[in-house]
Length: 299
Image 1 (spheres, helix red, strand yellow):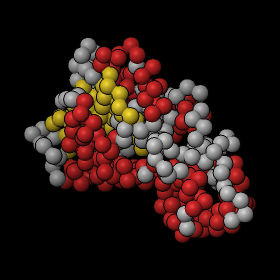
Image 2 (tube, helix red, strand yellow):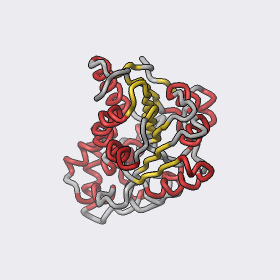
Image 3 (cartoon, helix red, strand yellow):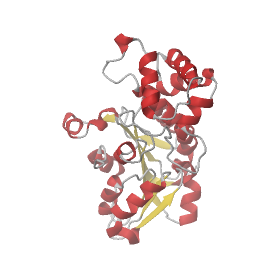
Image 4 (cartoon, helix red, strand yellow):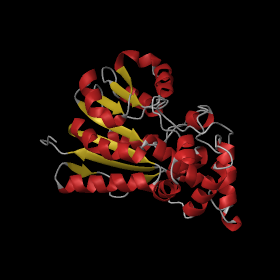
């Protein structure tokens, strides 16, 4: 499956990349957005691409091969963006993109258990150096912790029933695969709620992925650093895929605007149009927010 970057027209509109400007794609993935930025910043603009998944950096290297002299690729978390920029000396920065979604490759081919549609080992790590896996959470965390993860990160209404069934089943046999977990969740959710608009397993898998990769913690610690590395007049675009991320970005932007640090360019989040949703269903849940850093402001 080819990864299709979301909201490309809107990303270019709000980042407004110009010739010779340096940009950061802080979650470069398979470089779909980065290639567009490289085209717009010719002849000498550089793109710093960051990704926590080492495999994605390999993919990005292949995709951006024609622009290799203008691309710097770093396998790290965007939470460390300040140190990454200093170390690689890509300055000044006029635009930063944070696309918080995960890629089609990660779902379809990474074999890390991101999807309940494939029978794979329950892993869900972007960073294989990290010791925390989804398997560790479901087999070793106390039931109350699993409830908390499902409620907070998945907004799962049946969190208690699901956590109870997980605890019951892991006492019989270790839960190792996505299909094992899928079956457990399906048995925990009342029959009439199993076939709604989204599959009854979706929210639990989302919650585990967020917990394993500390996605909300990383976003919270990264946002101030992201603003700080932007040059005055520089722009930041964030694309989120669930309400927890979007809410965090919205509140952070509002606070920074009150402080006079930034100006919000999107009073309401931008969503994909019907045509894009038809062509790329995963764009359905994407929400884009953008800001510009005020001139003569140093954070």
